[in-house]
Image: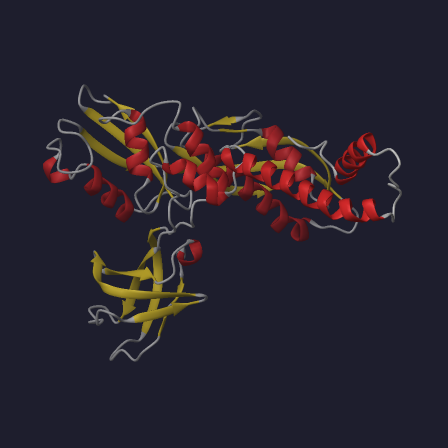
Length: 357
């Protein structure tokens, strides 16, 4: 807003005003008057810079995280905090008694057992909040001796952990809050309540899917993958416990019978003809191509909750693969044997199948 207020402009105006009153004054650089006014001009410009910053911090589209949080609080919106991952672990021999409070290490994450189980598996909670604990496999090393323990391993991710909500996502939530009001079990109300549950990355809401008073929720994990049965059951209990459906004992309003299911993975086979650059073989280029496909499918999964329908587009895959150093040209791309784009169902997210180049 104050781009025209520069040091030179301010100083020139100050000197011009002095000359207007006293034309005989020496205002050349190095003169007493010039030397006296130059520092004052610097401070005046700094003041305008500060005013410009204050202006930016006052509006949510330009505010930094600290001031965006304060503006969002006016709408009852707070940034989602990081949550801890919960993994499923198997111990050998079967039937081993593991003391509550036992701690285990896997790579850079430490997990603790608090006495909770799921079927025959043990549930361990990561001690560090965030995605660091999102592990679906690996060996667990006990941090203290456990009598009789032979092996300990991760067999699944029960509840994915999520990192603290980033600034731009919070900013978008703030602006979205003006579009519709969450109230009394409407779609936005369900999206907000389910989305705030630890481990949930998004939800699709289907009102009256089996008549009045019935609601279907399809959720995706905060790692944007198919949610575990443990997470689905946890959300079901939180929203509308199965044993007391419609009685209002969860977050759902009285009279709403809610069914919670999880997104389903659809394996997408990509068959394409790539012309590789000199010095590259398919075995060398394949890991890079796989990473490109995985990144694209992850983008689609992240947009699943708000998209009308996910479509895996041939043009997107080809343009992204062409950006690889190893790929000179690409043609005749097929998805699951078809030559066109691949439209997915309401509750489906793509995962990479075979990639043939």
